[in-house]
Image 1 (cartoon, rainbow, N blue to C red):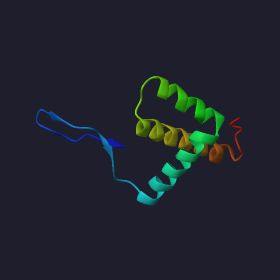
Image 2: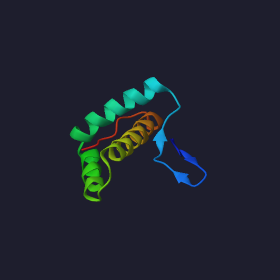
Image 3: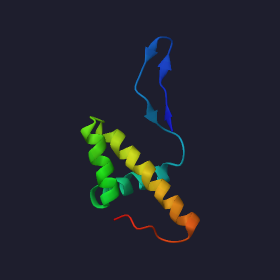
Image 4: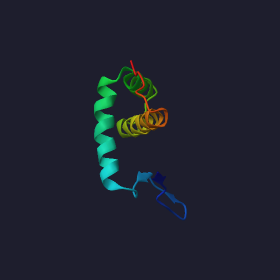
Length: 83
């Protein structure tokens, strides 16, 4: 989750830290690949890019959406068509 880096009146960019590093790294690489190859996530990436979002922001949003999809697959115990 993003954590604010703030002190007094100073406001800085939010960064993601904490959690399980290996899982975060694997999810990042998977999101990078999925944003190029899975049509649903490619469309999401293109919409966000058109709105002017930063590349890292887009990639983290894709990673989160990928995690939501994977959790649904596990919950339903069947693959979900992403085409």
